[in-house]
Length: 404
Image (cartoon, rainbow, N blue to C red):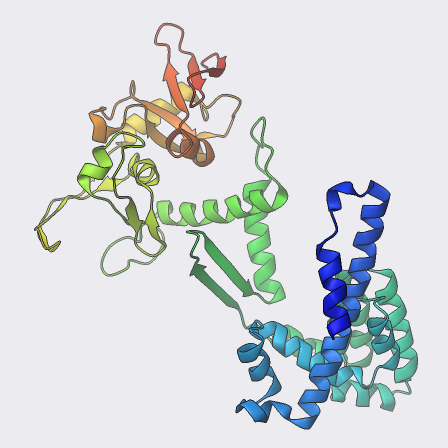
């Protein structure tokens, strides 16, 4: 192990910037193979410890529990490592390919996951040789990516255990978790059955396959994430969701009035807070308050509410409709996002004295609404020409565009 640590130390000392492209790519390939071999060695060691029940030394109830507690493995990774090690004992060809670094842990897992004792028994009853199956699937794994290997495995399962595929299809369990991270981002994780996944994919595709705004450089993953948010916003705005504690479900933002009225970048100004996701900066709170129902709550020195005012809608339906007719789409330079993707934006925020009116309003898609608050961009409309102008934070103009 000391030699391995020494080799890793030498590797960490390589100045990658000095390597040629050919050398760098060769290094990446070698490291990929080495990572596979290390993963295989880890799987073998885990299996040996599992067989001996060595985890009992530390009071753990299983090898999976020990990996989660002592190695800080994610639960699904611990489960996959233990189960892969157990089943590889019956698949020498796959185990050899894994040990040689020719396939990765994902390949080994998709193969071993299908090799349940029941399916192996059914294959034997049907005269299907497990050794031949092992050689075929190991060869497939050497030549394909894990998801392609999984397709071949599914074909084998369908031939050996057609009733089992029905059992798999009957498993409609769905899991989904959201966690607010220390960095202020929200992290999603989960899995769906095939039918549930198809429903979600179809809904997201409907949002993604609309007219793509000009200059849209988002990646597929970014567009898919934006579509998921749009799906949630549409459900909230549509009013068809069940009431929560007697009122329509909504996004709740709390911000101190002085913070809301402060100028951008004012020092010592506290941010706001979302009901579930937690703290946000004042500009994000101002953006969300641009087109929302606003309720005043007066608090005393101890922070306890003294008075709650009636909610006021900042933008009426009539004003919104008039602005949609006038602007036609997001008015940020180079963007053609349609009205249904857009928020009502106060050019001069109402907290700074700006009126809620057609003259002080504009359509901005969520991305460019964020640019105008958190990003420091500004927009102005020339009333004579009807043209909107977009300006960078340094005051220079991006470009101007004719109004509709």
